[in-house]
Image (cartoon, rainbow, N blue to C red; front, side, top):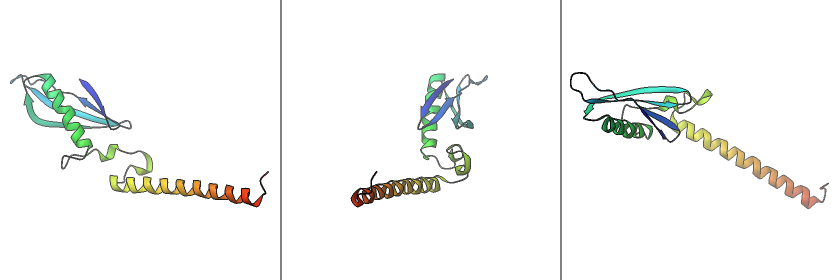
Length: 121
């Protein structure tokens, strides 16, 4: 069993060998924020290493949103953001950054006004 880190997620490959065919299966979990989601595929490989490589590659594609119907969106956030879709989370994060930038700008302007008025302590 191997674990790969990718974009803040852990992909834990769990290939196992079937008794009859002696082939290795594609079976893995993706972990983040204390939660996990299992995935498996009906593909078989001659070696455990080949199956593990396939698990890691599929996990990265799922995290990137590259496989229709397979998602890890529910693992991406915690707290009140958990139920939001990726696009909404990105917009909310952008709005938060904009508000922070605006607050810094207000502080800078306020400091400049104080300095120009000569009222600085």
